[in-house]
Length: 79
Image (tube, rainbow, N blue to C red; front, side):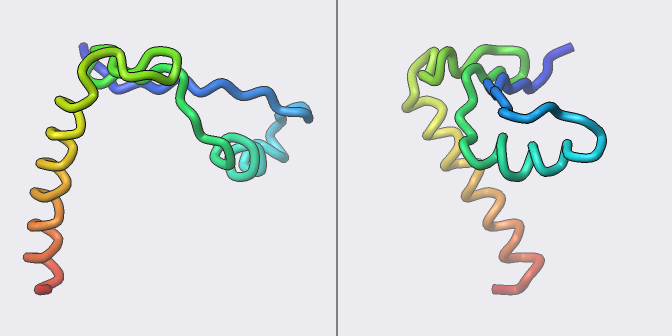
């Protein structure tokens, strides 16, 4: 199986428990979201916050996917 996976370093200053987990996610983790490592379809894309392979290839593919997604949205919303 291939998976998408993100490693995000997080050193919370308070203990995490069932009562405050969402506060840690909202105000701690997402406030400074800088993935250390990213895997897409089982392949490492980012290592130590740097593109592992040619960044231009990923940006080109991302732009293509974004355009295709926007075309679908336009059809649904009738823009």
